[in-house]
Amino acid sequence: MNGAERPDDFDTLTPARIVEELDRYVVGQDKAKRAVAVALRNRARRKRLAPELREEVAPKNILMIGPTGVGKTEIARRLAKLCASPFVKVEATKYTEVGYVGRDVESMVRDLMAAGHQMVRDERRSAVAAEAARRAEERLLDLLLPGLKADESRITVVDPGSGDTREKFRSLLRAGKLDEREVEVTVSEQGPTPLGVIGGPSMDELEGALKGLAGMFGGRKKKKTVRVREARRLLEEEEADKLVDDERLAEEARTRVEQDGIVFIDEFDKIAVREGARAGGPDVSREGVQRDILPIVEGSKVTTKWGVVDTTHVLFIAAGAFNVARPQDLIPELQGRFPIRVELESLDADDFERILSEPENALVRQYKALLATEELELEFAPGAVRALAEVAARANAAAEDIGARRLHTVMERLLEEVSFDAPNLKGTKVTVDAAFVEERFRDVWKRDDLAKYIL
Image (tube, rainbow, N blue to C red):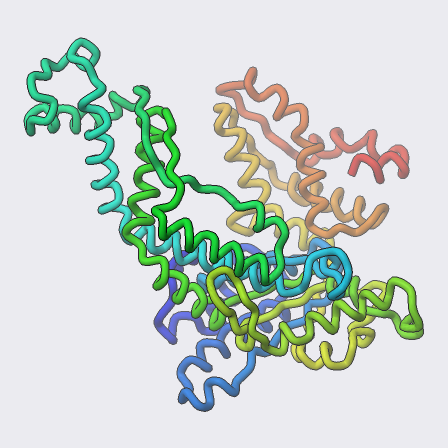
């Protein structure tokens, strides 16, 4: 299934199929996969209920418990991509209680709405891409014909507007022979307003109002001198935006966010207050953040620049290691809003071996593809991947356990010299075997303190 397509068939996304899709990118963690699969399936079931009952069915939010690097974020991200849902990842530690300096918790909803708006805009642009390209081509021809001289184009231009000449230029344009010429284009000026940095609901409303006023007066225009290749892209984007109804786009984006949105809150354990620590100090702010998050998770209306968003049916997935604090240290009301708790397992050498080779985005495949661009063939002999997995497991045991993230460090260390010399090794083949792995890491293990810094 293509994750960019919106699945409309109820029979398509069964829990088993969802787990099967997640298995392509995430190794193990079957309990977590089943939990998110059921949560997603319940969303599909809810849409088939009668309207009066549909509004009463709330999403079953999920609390993932496990160390870093075991797949919590990847499961949530792949789930959102699978069902084409608006998705945003936030960190609980970035928020502060109302009245303190910092980001307010409602900004996660505004971020989700921005992601949903961009998602729908991209879909609408794709739908009108052919017409936008046609219009952009006509505008480019209008710009090129008056500016091109006969000796430059090797075409005798008697009447620059004549159909015959225009078609000749069209052929040159489509063949890419005019891509390096410069033209002056006038496009709508794009870019963030300073108000967007400040944040806050009132700022969103003010920014939207100012944009509305700018639209009434035709918006700001800017002249730019660019090459034809860049001009085509700018004009196609502008023409696509003209063909998209902004009001309908915002309405569809709000509906998509409210019905299908997913918010992933990482480091959730960092805002938990350990038992006996509620007397005062910094823990007061942590509990305040929890109480600010609570109404968002329960369901509230948040004002964004594209309208009011109701979070009642947004799916929230929280995650944390909970090494020090426990889920029971969260305030009771917030605990109740995450009824599904899943504990993810730490990864060992067997898991690392599978992660290196099985997923579609496996690191071994990535490095083979990267070095292939240098016309260098990289081959991993039997036993090499297992040796790498054991190195990663040993490094995690000797230092901080960072899960599968350790594999990136190990792979970089392994192929450091090969990557450096790759431009001089074109047309050759490099074989990585267990002996190669042992040789690259022999010096690292001589001193435990050195291994902690290098790996």
